[in-house]
View 1 (cartoon, rainbow, N blue to C red):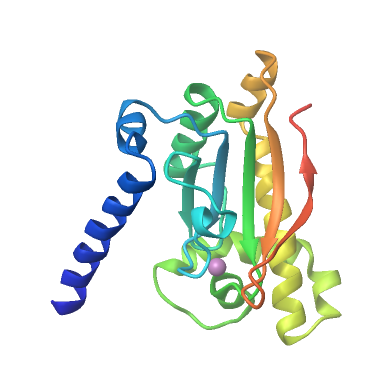
View 2: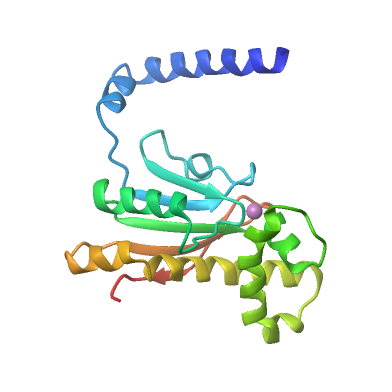
Length: 198
Ligand code: CO
């Protein structure tokens, strides 16, 4: 209980600090959000979108799940994507994976973990697609390469969605970025841009 009480105390202090540095901060944000970015990242506690990009509340719309997947039947992710593109009109969609991803690592092994195996199955399919390249790698190298391949695949899934195709038809430009984050040094590496010129 003490730890939870501490969280509430942290929040009180944070709120005070924000108000001290910008008295209008919460007034402005309570009226509307106008983020330019959508972040699709891993649930991993070590990869918090706002903090590692130095962004404040209101700056970035966020969806996170295990291993930053964009699955065509995942209404949760697709709803976030649709709202971000159609309503918020974000200019950039950042799919950000990270090296050493536990979800990717688990998917590359044969161990069963229960319910999540169904989710990780999407990564297993992707590993099968790239089995030739991956068979030449071992251990951390294999996991890390798979983390990169996964980010690029998920960015491609965003691009192929009807949400992005419809945006393109309306003449709305949304740039889709594949990024990967290193837990070791806190740096993001840009793996490339997928444009919405479907
Ligand atoms: Co992860």
